[in-house]
Length: 19
Image 1 (cartoon, helix red, strand yellow):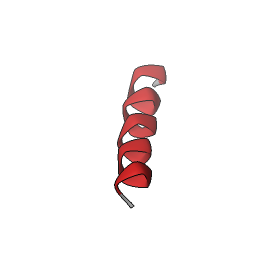
Image 2 (spheres, helix red, strand yellow; image 1 turned 30 degrees about the horizontal axis):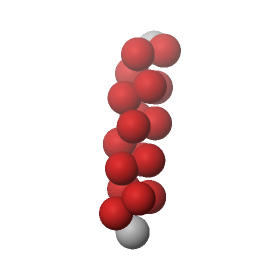
Image 3 (cartoon, one colour; image 1 turned 90 degrees about the vertical axis):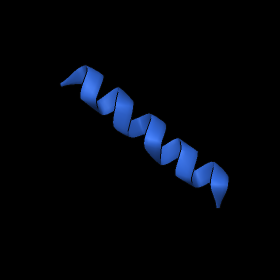
């Protein structure tokens, strides 16, 4: 659970950086 949450947060940050 924690791992997936961290992954989601990280992917969100990457998405913001890309946009």
